[in-house]
Length: 421
Image 1 (tube, rainbow, N blue to C red):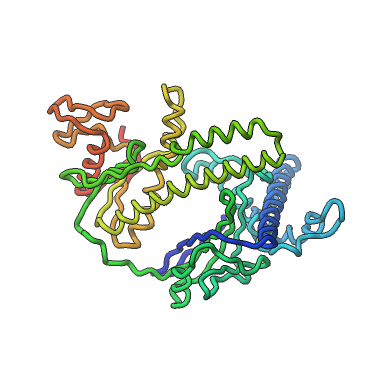
Image 2 (cartoon, rainbow, N blue to C red; image 1 turned 90 degrees about the horizontal axis):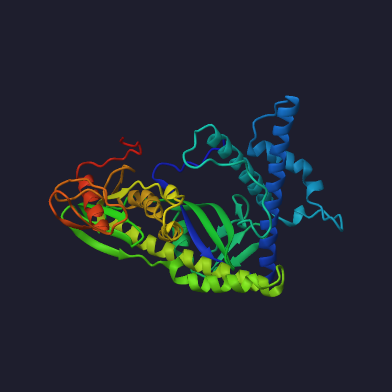
């Protein structure tokens, strides 16, 4: 199994993302690296499949797949694999070796995730064997972990191997300042296509001391995420804040439907078809950026302000698989638009940064259907407002859940994901 990088004591791994503004030649080189990674990935998947077939047919057992072994085999075969079909020219010297290494590593990681999933050692939905990647359908990306990669002192450029020094659209002073003071070290730079933009994610190890500046260290709040609201924040005595859901996808559905109809009337592969594709990709990228911005603002504020934050251990992926109910499709779209699992993921690493504590409630904790006045639990279905059968109190679903979560934090919380039957 591949081993992950473990930072030293007091250091954390953090990523900084920047949009790039490459020249025409640099853009061609970036896309060439994307294709090289895809080529190495498909070659590695083919080798893994061939080894499995040899084992099942002939009984010949090959060594366990590893990044080192497959990369060594790639270096032996790349002269034949990376050859232009028409000119027979070998093109691998035009691309950084890191692109091929990243492709081989992706295939090996996918293989071991498949093995863990089929043996029951990996939680969640079953994962299949790595599949071949196709141009146009692959999420174009490439990671550089060695070579000339740095953040330039002018705070406007990044340098990556072979591609060279590329201008960034944002100022890089925040990360450049940390590197100049010796508090950060660049581990890798990942280039990826997001819509019609090229993004660079600079992964660094940062010396980050826990900041004691939490506004109210003794404060305990419960956070209920949902579709109607992005989040409801409450203490044990009442609601503090109701954060509106930006509904980024919902606001762009009309435009997306129009562009999809437009694309369906155009010949695949034509210039106008490609233009429609670019417009659709740009809208999806904008939707993702809006959603990410609002969630980051919420989670950073929670981690900096409150000493203890209690959230639900929701099975977000399971909620997206519901079928057969009236309005299930629209409900799944709303759940996906709300990104219910993202706030908990961000709070997991942000709370230690700022000195606060995260408590994850049990997945089956009935926060929404428990009356916070008398403790009565009753079935409320999908109702937003409901009345307690025992004390007659009228509750709003999200407000009631947030108050119950805050009170759970006062009791020490339930961090288990084991169902309570």
